[in-house]
Every structure is written in C-alpha cells, then in structure tokens.
Amino acid sequence: MTTLLAIETSTEACSVAVWRDGEVLERFEIAPRQHATLLLPWCEDMLAEAGVAKSQLDAIAVGRGPGAFTGVRLAIAAAQGMALGLDRPLLPVSTLAALALGPSLEHPLVEGQKIMAAIDARMGEVYAACYESRGSDELHALGDEALAAPDALALAAGEGWIGVGTGFAASQGELRQRMGSQLIECSEAALPRAVAVARLGARDFAAGLAVAPERVEPAYLRNKVALTLVEQQAARAARNLAG
Image 1: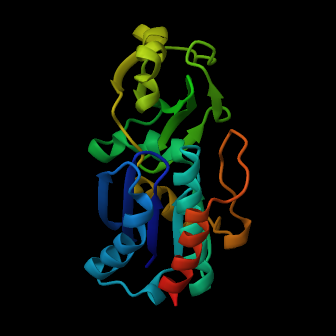
Image 2: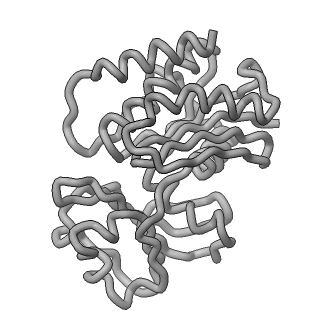
C-alpha cells in the first residue's frame, strides 16, 4: 500500500491531498496570498481526516512549478521540511503535468489525447507544455516546458487538442485565439490540484523515482534570488510539524 501526502500551491489555489493506495482525499481552495497560513494546518487536517499518521507516509509529492515564485518555493520548502523530519523522500511533480491531468479527474481520457496546459505567468507571459495521454495516469511530454508571451509561444501542430489552464485566458485570450479550431475543448479557469499531484506522484513512486529532499529544486523558468523570510519560516515550521 502506497501512502502519500501531496501539496500544490503554485498558483492562486491552495491544495493538499492524501493518497492511500488509489483512494484520495483532497482540500482545494482558491485563496490568493493565504497559502502560507493555510498549508501546514491543512496538511495536519487532511492526514487526520484520512486516519493517516505522519509516520505512515511513504513519501511526499509536491508541485515543483512552474508557477508563482512564492507559491512554488513555499510548497517545496514545506515538503522538504516535513520529508527531512520524517526521513522520507520527495516526489517532485510538474505543475503543468498536474494541470494537464486535470481533465481526466472528470472523465477518462482516450489514449492518444493531446493536451496543452498553460498557466498565466503574469508580465504578459504564460507557462506552457504539451502532453499526450498514455493511460489514466500516464502523460507523455511532447517537448519542454516553456515561458513566452502568448503571441510568441510555439504552437503545437495538428488538431484535436484539449486546452487547460489560465494561460488560455491571459492577454485577452490570445493563446486560445491563436489555436482556434485546433482546440476541441478549453478550460480557461482550470488550476492544478493536489489530487493530480498525488496521482502522478504515486505513479513515479511505483517507478522508483522518489528522490532525497535536498535534491528537489523549484522549476521557475524565470530567475529567482534568495529565499524570502516567509519561505524560510515555512521550512522551519514544516520541520516542527514533522517532529
């Protein structure tokens, strides 16, 4: 039985989930600027609700970006603090991959379905990546994650794409307009969720891809300097939580 705690705070949504051998409980809320206050209490609450002791966790899955600088760093700092305190590994999951998995939370994706995930990166840019479904929890990346203005982003080829994420609404919906008839479906308000991070993390855990906490680095796609005070405090609090 695989038991995971999953954390995702890369966007304006705060989300925590507990995965227990295929069954998952999740708390999700759009809570701008409240992540640092909500995250650790939610982790405690979700573990209690699932009846899982921290010592029963096999690993912690975390959305590693790209996304908002503070949100990405907060999630990783908290996950690292807990993992180090518990002597458990981490499962870093792409925020864009978690977002791309979102449609399958509502209905199964057919094998070969192409999905473009895009997050509003502010400053007139979007984070984006393309995937192809290879099963319920299997996504094959069709290239690298990118950061670009919607009018400069290299578009995917072909028809029949599902678009998902706030990047399709950025800059007056320019990316959605550029893709036009290539899109068969588009969810502009979708945000990455911890339940998707948990599903992808469980897949990676089964494949032996868990890593030591100190090896996990945030994927900003933009340069970022030192930790902020709130991020340092989050790391210390997470270590105390794990103790």
